[in-house]
Image (cartoon, rainbow, N blue to C red; front, side):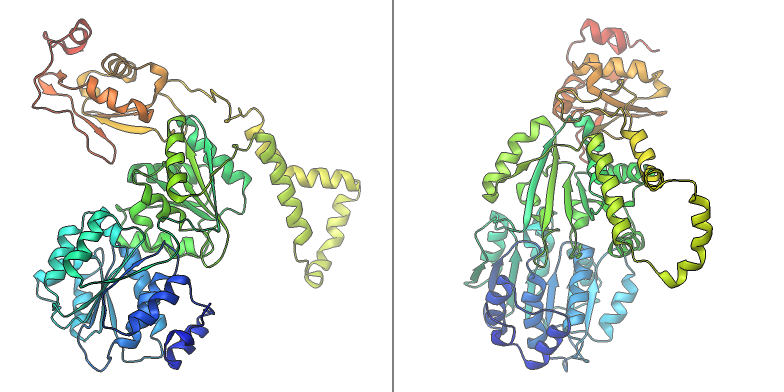
Amino acid sequence: MKSFPALGLSGQLVDVIQQLGFETPTPVQEKAIPLLLQGNADVVALAQTGTGKTAAFGLPLVELIDPNLRQPQALILAPTRELCLQITNDLEKFSKSYKDLRSVAVYGGASMGDQIRKIKHGVNLVIATPGRLIDLLSRKALQLQTIKYVVLDEADEMLNMGFKEDIDEILATTPDTKITWLFSATMPREVRQIAQAYMRNPEEITTGTRNQANENIDHQYVVVNERDKYLALKRFLDYTTEMYGVVFCRTKVDTQQIAEHLMKDGYNADALHGDLSQQQRDKVMRSFRNKAIQVLVATDVAARGIDVDNLTHVVHMNLPDEIEYYTHRAGRTARAGRKGISLAIVGKRDRGRIQQIEKMLNKRFTKVPVPTGDEICTKKLIDMMHQVKSVEVNDEEIDSFLPEVYHELMNLSKEEIIKRFASIEFNQIYKYYRDAPDLNSAEGPRVEAGESEGYPTGERIFINVGKMDGLDKGSLLGLICDFGDVKSKQIGKIDIKGAYSFFEVEPELTEKIFKGFSGIQVRGRPVRLELTGVKKEVDRDRKRPQASKKRDRFWGNKKKSY
């Protein structure tokens, strides 16, 4: 293992690195820094999330930029605002002894006027998200003709988010003589195409084997019924009191609802997703970094750029559609050489996906049980006793108060005091879990259709009919069961509004329900379904199938109304 001075960095920069607490370079830094310091070759670097990629390209940039030239010399593109700000913050730390080197973060959700003013004052480094950079270029507020270095960070993620055309447009405005460094966790076909189109014989750096998982991550999974996922999450939170982590959901709606349910149930939690303003996002992240929030519930996109080194857990409420996303998620934990747990809470139909991810990562997952009520109660009491044993006693301050305490407890034996003291923690948790079912059983707890408690984390479907169509929960449930050919116990919570409604359903039934409602009309207008977060409309152009007796009973050819 080389040291930072051995990589060719200047003594001035090495001093800064040591002040920041870095001792030895990571594998990607060890391979990339000497090559990038030469400043004359395009480079493709493949390395997983959390391996120190920002320093791998940031330290060479600090050395190569001429701060006396008040013009943009380096452009770093990142997929999200959080990652953009994280990179900017890291570069400012690296360059703190380079007083004249200036950088600007360019991203949506913040004042464009402030960003333009900083650019006019003269900047050397531009760290940007593609969308906002396109806006500035169209306003001619920023020129890229002087750019010498372009860094594409998290290139695979930018393409997954649909930034291909923006990247093409941005790179087309930069000089042909620029040096391009592409950093990515994976190398899909689209990333390879960008490398071929905009890079000249790039040298490739790979750390470990492709798709290799961080060896410090313990990959676990638990299998429960779909509607029991939220209950399982709560049990792991109750059992693992030291948990400090990120809970991943597929959609913004799932993210917000699970966070709200956790907060209502007394957990220190909050949501991070794309519908939040920048001010709200900054507030949430500040609370999370300060550990005022124990659990951050986030979407894949919003979680990009979360730079917190001491996370103990990553929890997957839904396995991602793209297997590569799993690697990005899990990489939020086990950073800087620490250990971490990646826990997937899956339904029975997702067990095959676990095997796919195992094969891709060449990593065995451990199946773990959901803690039972008795196990949680025991763990809570033991944790409390450990706190009692390890608490720091300030004899000088507390001694004057103890006589009254002794007097109050004088009629109780030592055993009675311990029993009563333990009951302070025990009574409430035992009351909750006293009759709690075993979520590891084949059936698990059941709830009445249309009235599910909590949040089952199944699919939530929008339907454009409601009270104004003469429907109530019972009649809407009947429609869903008839047209979708499903059983009432497979339908979760129904939320009926004026002109529209929502209902929750086990994910494996969504396609069947959408097909069942295809071509159906009510009062002359087509019924429309949307999967929350992913629009999935009934095809209005398809000819309506001939109504069956079931369809006539509700709104068939006679268009009977309620």
